[in-house]
Amino acid sequence: MIRRWLPWFAVALILAVTLGLMCRPMRRDTATVDETAFLGAGYSYWHGHRYYLNVEHPPLMQLWSALPLFFLDVKMPTDSEEFFSDTNRTVSSVMTERWDFRMGLIQEPLPVGEHFYHYTAFEEGIFGRVLVYGGVNDADKLLFWGRFMQALVMLATGALVFAWARSLSNLTGGLLALVAWSFNPIALAYGHLIITDPGIALMLPLTVWMFSRFLDSPRPRTALLAGLAFGGALVTKYTAIILVPIFGLLLVLAWWKQRRLVRAQSLRSLFANLCLLLVVAWITIASFYIPHWLPPPPLTPQDAEFLHVPSWFIRLRWLLIPRDFFKGFTIMLLHVVNGHQAYLFSEWSGKGWWYYYPVAILVKTPAALLLLLVSAIAMALRRIRHSSFAEAAPLIAAAAYLVCAITSKADIGIRHVLPIYPLLAVVAGIEFARARRREQLIAWLLVAWLAETAFLARADYIAYFNEFVGGPAHGQDYLLDSNFDWGQNGKPLKEWVEENHLAHIYLDYFGTVTVIGYLHIPAQLVAPSEVPKLRDGYLVISATHLMSPDYDWLRSHHMPVARIGNTLFVYALPPSHPTSPK
Image 1 (cartoon, rainbow, N blue to C red):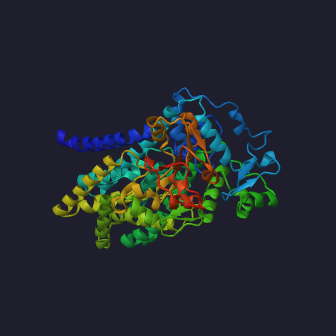
Image 2: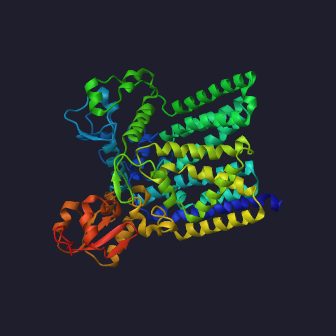
Image 3: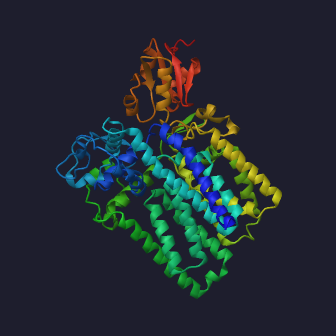
């Protein structure tokens, strides 16, 4: 009896330790750039404002993270209704972000019928910051419970990789896969944040697993499960559309591995059940948008051009139901195609680099995990012709996901390839479970090293870089933004100011700026152009701003006197003038 329950005790223990590792950053990290917007939008959705704020992301994870706020004493900000009213209103800002993520000035208020086309990037940011850090609510409590819901999703992903790997190998494979996911600092970094990435790291692998089971046995039951997972993935994050080419590759792989699919009767059954899968997926999506099933309203060609709404969207608008889903999906596609300001190897680009995500994986993944995964991939490729379809599916899905990510011009952060890690954890579990005892011993030594890495990196998982590049001390030389400096170190900044008994500092902060006032940090926000004029005191600059061309002169000719939490650099004033460096 004891031996029967021992595996589940081991799983529970690993998941409990994982949650314990996340508890410190859940309490200590100040809100990162996107978290207040996500939490505020989710809270507004529960209040019936569906789905006006944060349209570039589907609603599921925002609803999930904001669920605990119903049980807390949360107060809506004063005059908050102006953000949501759909009648007799003008837009809440004189600026709008076009659908291609470019800002424009609104010369005249948009007509009421066209409020649907307004992109509420400014409103979502303002409302979320005021809700969390506006002084009417306990910011730490709101963030902790929102993050706790995300941590549960991260733990569910651990349970998923354990169950999947065990089903294809044995207990050893399941446990190894679980540890490879749970003690990955990248998973710990984003698994506790109020963003969509933990959700898609669960739903995409789950969908791949369910779809592989469907192809292995095309029946109504497996089609139903795969359809529910696929629909759930699409209302978790729009990038789940990557599952479509993954499905195509898995169909080809299934044909190669299981030639019986080419029989006429099997093909008819497969087609019928595949249609059922798609119908179930679409019903799942549509259920989240009840009763908002009207098509998008008409829009003049001039306004469509100003807001950069694609012409195909206007032509097909009668078919685009639910309209809010298609609006967000279109904005995501335009973002991927048009790019985003990104940083790699001390260079900036608005169009990105094809090798951005491979490099990010190489410098952010712990050395122990890299060795484990590379070894597992090599073993899987060596026996790919002899492996079953189900065993090959997670590796094919991970490869397809990475190839699709490489084509994106929006190189924002490694969190966008987070689903690769649970897929490869399953591959590692399968391969090492079948390996010789000596190879299994090496694998367990690597995961022990990984666990040690996770424990040592717990001070700031977001800023983690692996041993090959010198750790987080050199992170700013490789990647920025959500890879390193995402506004998480507001509390360490406050502690540093208090420890040094400073009555005033100058600050150029990348993050949720309202946290500075909320924490009562005596800081004056400054722009790069103002820095050469400063004559006394201390200047603190976030790494993401410091590495911009505006500060080339400062980095070249002036050394920081301190560093706060890896990502905040402190300079004594006056700084070197760009025309007369020291």
